[in-house]
Length: 350
Image (cartoon, rainbow, N blue to C red; front, side):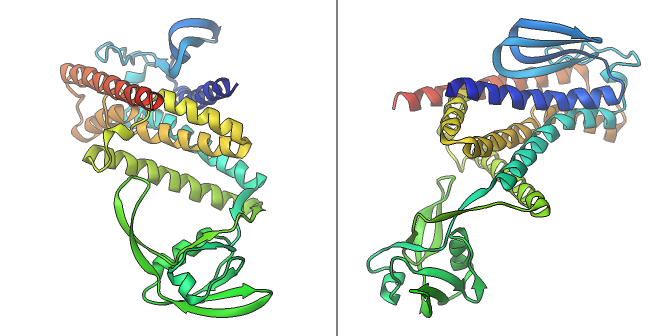
């Protein structure tokens, strides 16, 4: 059941991406010949207007085939009035951007739904206190509620680490114990740790962990939009940094996941509940948006690059160069997909 949900999630995200391209193309009067979810043999096709809407056998992507635009052969062009090639470069760029934009919009809407459904947050109650840590030496106890750090009010556990790491020198905690306020001053300990990319970093700790005491925060109408915007920006920044670190070698290529990992984690998220599924679906949607903007020929970002060149130089890119760059792009993408699949199989083998 989880795998079916995962495939459905991927199909919906691909549909929204391609719908973005389709909508922008039709807005500029470009004929769309095929709108397909999946690749390979078509399992179902229905012609609506002049567009063939299809479901294909391999549900690992999708495409919109516009008149005069063919990724398999970029030299096959048409210059009819309703052709992609007949449009101005800035119009083509908008058509290309519309796909990734649809993914970012989808993520925003999912985060907005989460905000209105309620976001689970840990309350700032101390659970375990590590022996010989600054908190232990300062007299912090299990069950203490941290209400203020250096004059800043603390509402949720996630704010504690941010305030500690933003501090310079000793910090002052106001805690609540047995409904009585108490002020404690201590100096955080600096440790070496690993960030989410596996890089060694320094961070400040006081040696406490949270008590599993949480609340659900339901955002109001306006605050919900701010939460959704912040989460979409945060997710986009995370994906951009991940790609950057992969390219520079800061993150090993064995960390690259493929379709099996995506399906597996999405299936697990579906078992964890609707909120977990929405969170992970939003992250995948942002991932699709960011990756499609990479300047790799055969991706939206590569086509945008070609059109920017035409806008700046006032002439079309050389057809042969475009062809070879597009083929190279497909080879690169194929290699990345195979590497992801190889890593997936390695993980499954333990």
